[in-house]
Amino acid sequence: EIVRYIHDLGARVKLHICGNITHLLTPIKEIHADIVDIDWQVDMVAAREVLGAETILCGNINPVVIQDRGPDEVYALTRELVEQQKGQRFILSGGCEITVNTPFANLLAMRRASL
Image 1 (cartoon, one colour):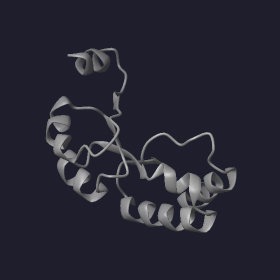
Image 2 (spheres, helix red, strand yellow):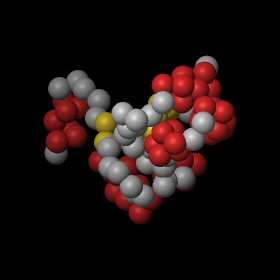
Image 3 (cartoon, helix red, strand yellow):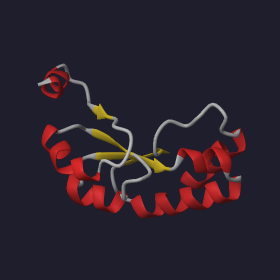
Image 4 (cartoon, one colour):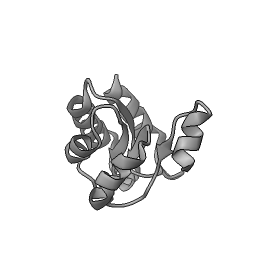
């Protein structure tokens, strides 16, 4: 009901649920959210198969990795995800919220990898 109301107002709906939501993907598809946050525990290919080509997937690099690993590893993981999602409706993001303790260099590595 709330999704339909938001759509009736002309807005898009972004759904964020933390954790492994693999078992919820089919019911999530049925609510017709425009954007679905995919946490790092969920396989993006599987999420795409269930949610379909029209849903915008957002995610899904482990935020602990983004915070605790070096820029080279963050770059490599980001580049791999960007290549995997190329041509798809996709927003690059952490698999959940990126912490305030994340080094700026790691965020720049994500940005470079996304270009």
